Amino acid sequence: ETGVTQTPRHLVMGMTNKKSLKCEQHLGHNAMYWYKQSAKKPLELMFVYSLEERVENNSVPSRFSPECPNSSHLFLHLHTLQPEDSALYLCASSPWTSGSPSTDTQYFGPGTRLTVL
Amino acid sequence: GQNIDQPTEMTATEGAIVQINCTYQTSGFNGLFWYQQHAGEAPTFLSYNVLDGLEEKGRFSSFLSRSKGYSYLLLKELQMKDSASYLCAVKDSNYQLIWGAGTKLIIKP
Image (tube, rainbow over the protein chains, first blue to last red):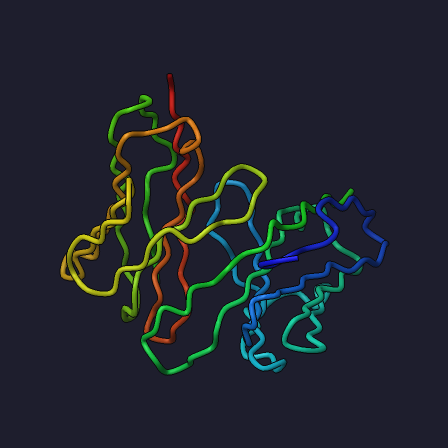
């Protein structure tokens, strides 16, 4: 496996279900990100982890709960979601050079297409 | 507030040239990125500009004018596989990426 992988690729869940999205990166990066992508809207940054510590949480509802057990893995735990949460959820990773005007290019996984019924 | 503007959709002909514009208003500037995203796939990195001028990479070029808050992505010798969405993103003073909504490019034979 190379790059950034995400599972599952597609997920349909009811509003009362609990599910988890998984992301794994094989690039040796030390920062990982969760984004939400809705049709015709900009990517919305949800969470950022650097060296397994959360450094950003952009006012995301508590029904989304991230977990970063190590620098290669990132999870997004979902519970009691709403239909408006249906979207493509993208994971990304990058080197972390905070404070430096570096490229810090983010590399994305293919995403999980989530549908909440 | 911070804002990135790019056209919603563009159409071009195979073999032609197309320019996708991006204008931005952000709190600070630490570089501008272009990504390509095919339907149902991951965004993939195309280019990064932090200084004014043109960066050329094969059939793709990206231009930046920081004084005008403006960038464009130029695609030459268009191929059908270039049909995709093109995302513009700016890294602000906090090194956070601010994203545009993307430009869907349709290539016709």
